[in-house]
Length: 551
Image (spheres, rainbow, N blue to C red):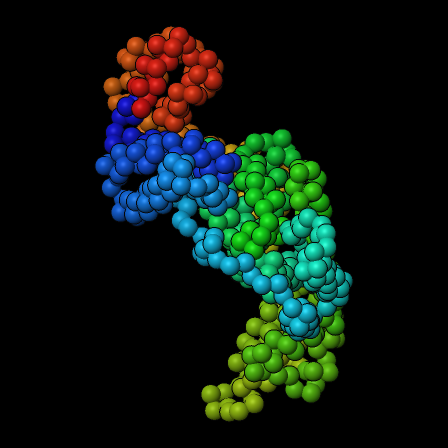
């Protein structure tokens, strides 16, 4: 083969088998069963060859499972196409899309399971009551609660229409949620998941939470597979994409990364319907999410329900404090209960409350408990151990002026690949601004040029400017080194470059064509005969010789 060691050869074989499997599944879903059978057989044979060289036990187990699955389907198609009957179309999406085909395992459940019986009127009423109970546990967000009631009623009426044979408009299940951190977006996302499950829209009520770093990889052709894995994890439930605007931030700056692949992968399945489909909920700041939605009209048309979450007011924060205290078995004494509203209103600014929202109460409760611990003794008993006083609250709230407690904005910024690098280089103060500007991965930092650093005010202080420039150079150098090391994995040891290898296999005349299509050793191993034909490699004899050499 063209690759110089067993590991690259195995990778190439596996990639080729995955491609054949995906072609088989596509033909199977499209009803071209003869082509599907032929592709399944080719995929099985290629996987079996790859197994001879694969050493990782987990990968071997996965491949064997997929081979068994494809073998069963191939045997079924062979019997049916031989005259025993008409083949049943394979499950949509089986085998995955893109490069994820061989890595997908069967989804839970059985395609042949009986369709869920239509919900009765009593069951619809019970679903509405259960949702109302969930809503009553949440503080504030009256507008969002109203929208949830409308959503519940619409879904229930669609079920009634369907039961009576009436026309039901094509369902669009996906949602957009905008607002500051701590305003309850995740709580409502979980409520949506439970509602969809109760009404049979979804088969599960679980929520898989992801951000850009969970979907986007650092190299070409990896993002699609990475995103497909998270989509599969959310199958039948909700994929909650927090700070989704990060996926288009670089693209809107005119800089390229692989975020577009993640969006494309999600859009592939957003038109699917049925209980086993994925519901996508995109969340983030209002302005940024409006830009995110406008960037791709196709995405905007696939999202029907839109919720905006206002910041909590002081009265809301007092109620949240009481709920958290009751849940923990703690309480306020009479003076603290009477003065809690004044403590929060006077001790915090509107900007601070907007930034933290519900998290402000978490910090206030924690700091007030610290004050209580400092006040009582180990000889204290009973209510004295769990009762906060007005001075406890007052001293706790005063700490907001001197401390910057952890909040989700900074936690998210510092936890990202870009944020960790900034902390390492002593530039942690810029992590939030960098995150908000759309720099969250190492790949994003490659695009941190002089103009970008100036717009982020990273060059205002000479010492920070030196570190920022050094960071940018370091990231680019590290990326280049990783790229070169990666290239070496695909480069035959006896060839200094692709032209040398082409000359060695008697296909030197193909060099200009491959160069025109930017083909290197990392791409060459995945090319098929059809790819070479489409690229214009000729004459036929040379094309076949090159294809055999690649294999």
